[in-house]
Structure formats: C-alpha cells, structure tokens
Amino acid sequence: MDQPRNVFTVDLEEWFHVCASGVDALAADNWERLPSRVDLTTRLVLDLLDQANVRATFFVVGWVAERHPRLVAAVRAAGHEIGSHSHLHRKIYELDRESFRADLRSSVSALAAAGVVSVTMFRAPEWSVNDRSLWALDVLAQEGIRVDASMAPVKLVGSPDYPRYPHVRNTDAGPITEVPPLVADRFRQVMPMGWGWGLRMSSPRRILRTIEAANRAGLPAVLTIHPWELDPQPPRVKLPARLQFAHYFRLSGFGRRLGEVLRHGSFGRIGDMTPISGT
Ligand SMILES: [Zn+2]
Image 1: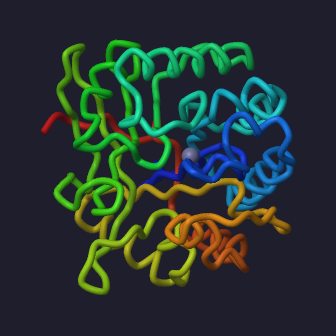
Image 2 (image 1 turned 180 degrees about the vertical axis):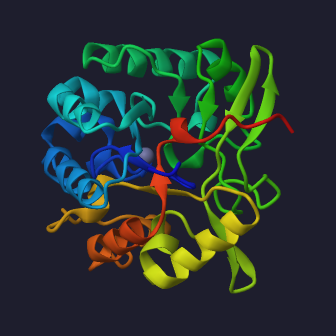
C-alpha cells in the first residue's frame, strides 16, 4: 500500500469532556454520574476507519483509559496508535508547569495500565497550547513526548500566525515536532477545516479539494474528530453559545460525510509520516 499522504486523528474522550468551565452539570465531580457514551461511540469510529481501511492516531484521555482499558486495547488491536489527550481534560493555560506535568504523568500511567507501554505523542484539550502556555512544550519534551498536536493556526484558540504544516520546535529538553490541524481561508478568516464545526459543515468534496491543495504543496493535511460527534443520540446539555456551536452544530449526517472523506482520501497515523526535517 502507498504511504498515506495525510493524517487522521481521534480525540478519545467522553461527550462531557468539553472544557465547559461554569457548566456545573459537567464539572469533573459529576463525571462518574453522567451517562457514559464513549464505548459505543468509539466503536462507531473504529467501524468507519475499518470500512475505509484507515489506521489513525488516537489521543486518549487518561480518565477514560482508567475506566475503559478494554476499549483502549480494541483501538490498539485494530492497528491504531495511541497518544495522550491529558488525564482530566483541563486547558493547559489554566495549569502551571508542575500541575500540567502531574496531569500528563497520570495520563501516561493510565495508558500504561491499559497496555500502552510507550507514549510519545500528545494533544492538549481544546488546542490549549498557545502563546499563554508555550512552556508546556518544555514539559512535554522533558517527559519524553516527541510529537505534539496541540497548536491550532486559528484565532479563537491559537493564532493564524502559527505554521500550518508539521514543524520542529526547540525546547529546553530538545526538539519536539508540532503537527497542526488543517485550516482553510474562507469567509475572510482562517477556519478550521480539519476538525469541529468546519469539518462538519463542509461537503466531502470541499474537504477533499482542500486536502489535495495541501498535498500539491507537499504538505500533509491533519484531520481530527471526537467519538461523540458520531453519537446517534447525543445527551443534550445547555452550554454557553460558543461551545453549543462547537459541540452540536451539524452533527446530523456527519458519519456518512466523514466516511466519504475517509474512503476517497489517503490517511494514516502520525507515525506513518516520513520524518519531518527541522525548520
Ligand atoms: Zn478533547
């Protein structure tokens, strides 16, 4: 099989891992009491990937790995690779160095208990490595993380000035490769094309065209989804307007559209990409 030209990633988390500070119903204290949907929805993701013969990179929340080790094993058994999506899904810029390090280590321990012996990839909740938390890259490198996929080149959560392609960043503890998600210039702004509302609202044709344009420039496109985006019966909670949009906008038919993108594109794991040279 040809080497995949693009990357497909999944942030493996519960539907209530939405960083909705101020929404008491979804506070961490309540997580044990909320209905779990992660097993059902992740298996839908696994089916979609299997049908399209795509191997992906799954960033797993440690809290989920602790409770669903067999699900983590099923993901690995299907040939996907595993990274950390933090332990308690807290935004990095709301932590300090040591609390971030502790959270990262908890997630790595939870993944180890679920059978993942080496964790070298990380994605922050809500793209929360940005100008307020660049110190996190030092902590990640110190803890043995070699690939970070947390910096979004869009205004709302990152910066349109961040590179749109995989690149190497130097830290206190050596280089770390940053793998940003796919964006596109539309409506006179930079929009998320590879994830969230942008991915859900765009037709498969438009997504595939944007991916091809990146590939023509010699760059991989990075897509990412959450299992809860495929939930046939998503639990509803009242969220602040921005999160409401990010979480619920155009879920209907998403699985079918995504399947089309997966079948017609060329996708693989981050680890399948050729080593990225320094910038
Ligand atoms: Zn997340």
